[in-house]
Each structure stands twice: as C-alpha cells, then as structure tokens.
Length: 223
Image 1: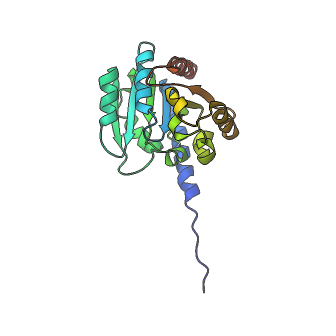
Image 2: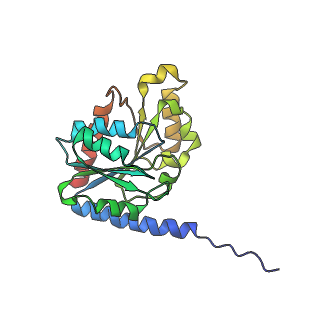
Image 3: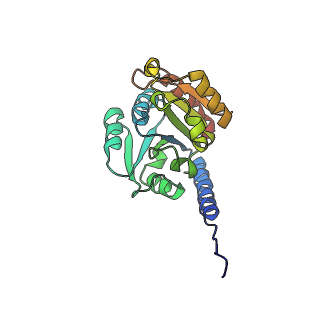
C-alpha cells in the first residue's frame, strides 16, 4: 500500500499573507498612516474603549475606524454616532479573522490621504485573529477582568503578538477573582515587551494613558 501523501499547506498560506502584510505596512509608512489592530474576546469592551479613546484624541489626530464582524453594522454605527469620525463595517463572510488582503480592501474604502490613524477592531475571539498578520503597525488587545487573569496561559499566541494589553473593566475587580499582579506576571511570561495598561472604559480610568501612548506611537511612525 502506498504511503498517505501529506501536503503541508499551512506554512505557505501564512507565508503568503506575511509577505502581503509586509507590503501593506510599507504602503502605510509611505502614506504616513498608522494602523492599529485591536483584538479581544466578544464583550470585552473594545467598542466602548474606542469611543472613549477617540473622543480624547480626535482633536490631535485624524482618526478612522474599520469594524470587522461576521455580520451586522452595529459597532460601526455606534462609533460614528458617538465620535463623528469615519467608520466603516467589514463583513468577513463567516471567517473568524482578517488577513492582510481583507484589511487592504477595507483601507481602500477610507480617505487615506486624510487620516493619521486607522483603528481596526478585529473579529472578537482570542485565537484566529492572532494567527494572521493584518499589515498593522501595532497589535493591541483588551482582556476584561471577568474573563480571568489566567487567559495569558490559555491563549499564548494572542498575548505574544501584542505590543499592548489593556486590562479593562477594573471597576468590577472586587467582584471577581482577578489578581492584577498575577495577570501582569503571566503576560510577561508570554511577552516581556508588552505594555500593560489597566483601564475602565465605563468610567474613563486609564484611557488617557492609552490615548497618550497611541499619540506617541503615531508621531514616531510618521517621522
């Protein structure tokens, strides 16, 4: 009996996307546009965090948002209504992530000559989005307190690819078994270079630190 033929396709698929993502980053650099890829679980507070942050920085930066979901335009409408900035919805056709080409298609529907910062709110989950380079300049994620402080141990890739981790919903820490110091330690185990900022999108606590961090990164990218 002939041996079973095994075809390794995962490496080539990711390699092609990585090459496309690198080209997209160069295009963004040439145009002076900073792309932030924001990831998290559903319900972690991505959209609320973005609204708070955008309203702090929209007088300093020209901002646009791409909302990625399997269906609906709820988040794009919410962003536009609450901030007044350009916001578009990306439907993934059932896919649980965005790749570089899908991101490029979204960027093609924005006035790229009129923005400094584009924020991509990726599809909500802690697995697939971490596997695909979107071409973003920076990866960030939100971990909410109700999810638990052990998530860096359970979803190592997500934490290892992120430059920034926002720990959201700090106002409910007294009601959950969440240890901030332990969570920081777990994040350092996965990614010692990651910046960690505790925030509360509901009250605004810590959002100014995130806003300042973001403005600094955009200014450095545009130099």
